[in-house]
Image (cartoon, rainbow, N blue to C red; front, side, top):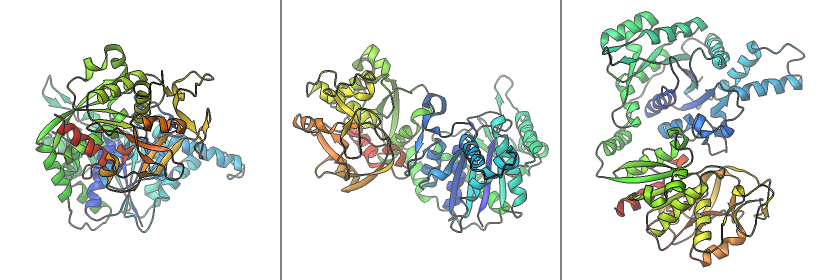
Length: 536
């Protein structure tokens, strides 16, 4: 039987539950346990795919095409395994399924209620992950204790513990220990109130993880343990890390979190092996150089909007033993002030994915600046579409070339639409193109930088888009000097482009950032940063 660890949070949101959950999962996996992870989001959106990145951060994409919460990115990067649609569930999907079941007559005319119908539906999602091949299932609940949206999930947790054999379930609660600089004091009262609220629901935490910016004395641990009814050794301090989020698993291992949970769940732990992880941290601590990379996007205001891109750059920096100094640029700033004024002195330029026409001209100007000044460039999804549009405008001479997405609805000019929606046979259509979600194959051509980076002829990458390079312009782009370095083997759609007479100018229709890991940097990011380093 699989064991279950539930992770909840209190006091404030954005404490880092996802990062902590991922770190605990990574520690358990490092000891040879087989792990599954699940993010439960209490918001009523059925799927995260339509959420604005400025509000909720990036939409993380799994290989099977699920648009999920960004915490799944933490899970995959730390635990080192690919997750799927079943690893992310929102309250909106739960309620939608319950209502659909009612309309089918599954409840035989009975009154549909939160208890038992919604709570049972929640528990069914947990049970689906059970398997003889899974030792521990870690389930993180978004939001904080006391949020009205999360009450059904907490009630389901309470019920679930009673339904399982003793030793099958453990509760980890994460709270904030504020530090008042004016008085030089830390305050435990918010944690006490948070745990009191949780216990009022019927859940007694087995482990408390206390986020703090300063060290906590032993007397504070004892006080928290006393008032929260938790053993003193189970009060874990998670202090702000010094230089990298990848320190968190090591910090939690020193606090013996994995051993505490193993005792609670009656699991025997083999020795831990963090050799590769510690080697990676040593490279983070001791970089040999640094590079300045500009990320030109349209959701720069929120760091989490491009979380996986930033992390993939960090991984590439580790692989090249360089520190990445990020310059986060709103593309509209380039439209206002010009590329030279903002990008002068950067060692590399990256244009990430996105939707809509806002800020497009700023992205195109940044790409032109990279092309004309021999600055290494990496384009991702929309970044490829902008790179093709820039090349079509300024090299091929197609005035105002661009994407049909950026043109007025009902006034799409196919004579300048180098990016369009296409059907499965790669025939151009003006509307209703199919959104590509999930993993797709790409055939890489000999002699290209992309083929050299991957070291393979056939690869697979995750996609999230509905616009493609217009097939009718491919020959013209190639004649002007653009290299199509990758194609979809089934539809022949353009997957990657590059410029041969440039230090490093590569763009992909895919989202390679989702496949990057701290101990295994993605090859495109790795070689992009290597080129940026060599151009200093």
